[in-house]
Image (cartoon, rainbow, N blue to C red; front, side, top):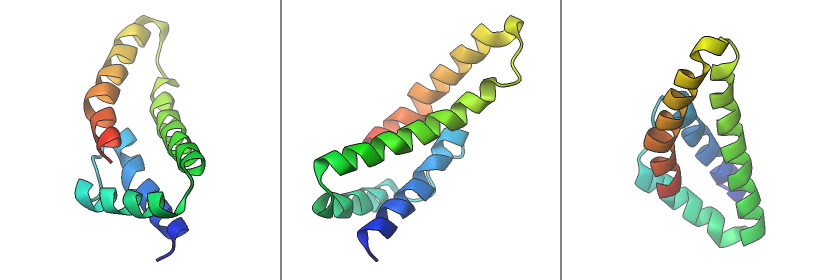
Length: 95
């Protein structure tokens, strides 16, 4: 597979994290794919790609706020931030 395919696979496997679905592969396998990308991509390009992946994931999380009423906004934000920092960030950083 080429480098673009590797990064595409990483994105497909990581984005479900932001929906609360968990990783779609073993973290070691995702590490290997990222390692292959690091061998080819410049640090600047890889940082951009990681930033785009994170932005897309956060956009997915933001959609959870669309139907929230003012009365439940704070509790929903707390719930989302706890989910983000407990369930998403540790895996995202690990990958």
